[in-house]
Image (cartoon, rainbow, N blue to C red; front, top):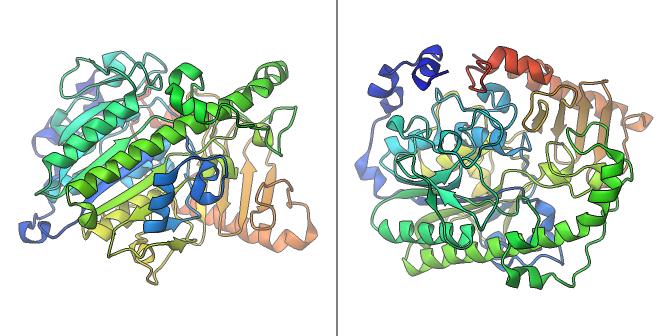
Length: 503
C-alpha cells in the first residue's frame, strides 16, 4: 500500500498534514521561559536487576547509580508490554498497546494520535531525537534499507510531533556498523562506536540550546544483543573478563513451552546453556559503556549551566531473562523482563534520594513528565499523572499495572498470548493458550520460584487480582484475542496499523 493510500485508509488524507489537528493548544511564550528542559535517556533491553543502585555487585554503573541518589527512583516501574516497539508506542502516546495497535514488533505506527512530541512542539519546545525509533518498519528484517529505516518528516506526523533535530533510524544493534537518517533518505554512516557518536550529537544539541527550552530524547541501543565481543569496546569487555556469571537460580534444562522462540530443547542445551555466561559478560560490558556515555551527558549539562533547570530521566524499554524460568530475551511478565529502571532528577524540585513504590507503567510516563513540566496532558491519554509522587507529595496512583502480551515478538504467530497484573507485592498472570494461571509473591519470593495459584490461603488474593485484570482489560476494550486476529482486524495486511481496540 502506498503512503498516500495508507493515510486515506486511516481517514487522514493529505489534508491532515496541511492543517494539523495538533495545533489547537495555545502557545504561551511568557510561561515558556520558565519551563524546564527535558533529557530523556532510554536504553534497550536493560533490566532493573543489573544495575549498581539496585544491589548488583557485578555492575559498574556509577553515573546511573548517582542519578538514583540525586532524584526519585520509581522502584516498581514496569514495561507494560516488554518488547521494543510496543513500549515506544506507549511511551509517546500515553496509551496501552491495545489502543495503539502496536501488538508485535516491525509494524508501522498509526500517526493519528496526539503524542508527546506534539505537546512539546505546540508549546514551543525545541525537540531532538537521536537513536533507535522502531515505530516505522512494516516488514521484518531489511533494517538497513531506507524504505524500512528512514522515517520521513511529512510535517513530522510520522515522527509523532518531533519536528526539531532528528538523527534516527528504525532498528540497528550492530554498534560498530551504526548509521542514521536526518530529513533525507540517504543513510549517514557512523564511524566508530555508535553510542559514543550519538552522545557526541546529544552534547552538541545541548550546547546549541542553552537559551531556549528543549526536549531531547536519546534512545541508545545497548545492551540489546547481539552479545558478541566485537559489538562492545574491548576495554569495557575487559572489565568483566574474569568475572563469573553463573546461570540463574531459576534455570531449567527444559525451555519454557510458552516462549515464542528458542524452545528447541537440543538448541537450548547445546547453544544457550553454555553461552549464557559469556552473553551476560558482554551485557554488563555494554551497560558499563552506556553508563559512561550517560556520565558525558550529565557533565555537558553541568558545563552548560543547565543542570538546575533540566529534568533528566533514565529508563529502559524492557529487560532480559538470560535463562531465568527457562526463558531468554523478553516478552513475558517475569521480573527480569518486565521490571525497568525509572529515575527522574530535577534539582530543587525533586528531593534527592526519594524512592516511590508506585506501580508506574509505560502509559504513565508521558502524563507524569508533562505534569512535571507544566504542559497540557491530552484528554485521551490512558496513563496517570504521577508527578506529585515524583516530588515527594501525596497523589493518586495506580492500584496495579496491567501487562499485555499479544503474541510473538515480531511474527503473526498464535499460541504465546498472555495478560498479567502486577501490584506492589504480587504478580498474577494467565496464558490464553490453555488458561494456565500463575501467582507470585514478589516480596517473599523475589525470584518468583513458587507458583501460589493452587495454595488455598491465596485464593482471595488470586480472585481479587483476576478481577482487577478483567476490569482493566474491559476499560481498554482488550478482548484477549489470538495474535493473528490483530493482523486481520487492526492492520491492512502489510503491517501498517489501521486501528486499535478503541478505533
